Length: 614
Image (cartoon, one colour):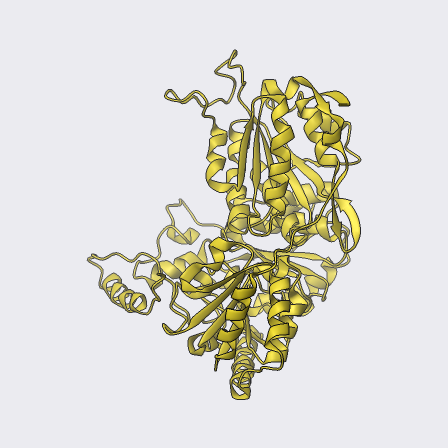
């Protein structure tokens, strides 16, 4: 057997460089690059290996380990899981900074390879700098925290171990049913050790993402159930996008006259004006989709994990409705007594299409969906139109940005008030141009994830980041990163004076405003941050807007700039597009406040509407 002598770090890097994938018929590196911050746990060995291959596996230096890993998550989402980024940290706090991003990737079923330095396998210098000692278990390090938020976890204590571990990590990240983050803890002394690796381990390997076909009997049962439906509804989830099943699902819905609603992750699989589309479903959904969900007798859930914001905590459906759940992940497919059809979304829908033949839903049901969606669009128009109010609403700002955006521009946002306002009000013009991270609702994803999107787009349209002032203040340093690296974004900061949407929830459940808006927090004196000046100090082009007209002009200018551009605008903290789905959150059973008592009584009525999941 022919071998090559390399350190473990060198061998790991060489292996990554020899993994490839097929994207749109073209062979591409499976690992597009690496976000890394070096420290004593990785700089002497891994940086030596990475420096030698920087033309094959480019290393991008971020400003914060969490935001780097979130950028990797954004990249994976932009590439629809067909290409992967690596996030690298030293040990201790650097590693722990990435745990939140790992949770984000895990919740959203997205691949990212996380590499973190670890303690010494030989324990000779223990305790090393940044080591957290566990008196009862010396094998435990901070990297054990990743076990809760990764699909694959390993600690490399001997150089030979990567021969078995790396292929398993890659297989996990490419498996559509088990996709998620993979983690390797790299002991510092193991990184330096040389080993005679088989040359075959480094053979160039082209990976293809598997498309598991569904069980024939389950397909037949699904066809029988769909044929029995009087009022069927499709819920299109993120799995439709990752399976590249956009066209198949859209054509299936149109041919069979089945109204199509979208989840948060699935939004953008079809365009807003597709004839079968009835809008987003759930807590931040549309009145049209929620109306259809409440009346539907058979729900065809495709590629969705049916989280509570989709189901309204399981209140938006009739108790008698039946579910057909098409999902590559068995765990997701079997939820809520669904007829589970485990398989790839595109292949399963294709088989259903062939088996259903010319069957169509009742024309009156199809027409009801179109009528409901027309009314929803009229409601959006009403809330998004300009008024003479001194401070614009989120809905108005979203409307201006959406109208200005080109079909190939991508909008990125995450936690706070913008999820509701964009899920409802962003009218998608081209497939796969909308990214709302709400599987984990990670504040700080917006700008970091935007960096990943801008990197993936390679200049094909703008990356538009919409972010609230709260998320901006939590994580903004990748504005500097994108200016340094030349990955332009247009960032729109909506300043409503704090955590306004959670203040809304607090008030709705009976508690007075407290510790959410800046003015209601324990501060010496409330004042506004000048976000334009702050971003300018990081090298961005900037403007502050006083009105919707200013915003429109600033957006036109932003398209002409040569770097990341930040536009700030003050927005209303209390005006929102209405929603009509319920959400189950804890409300005190006992309180001296009449408002809380009233909210609790109302919440009890919500819980009576919930479907039982067994």
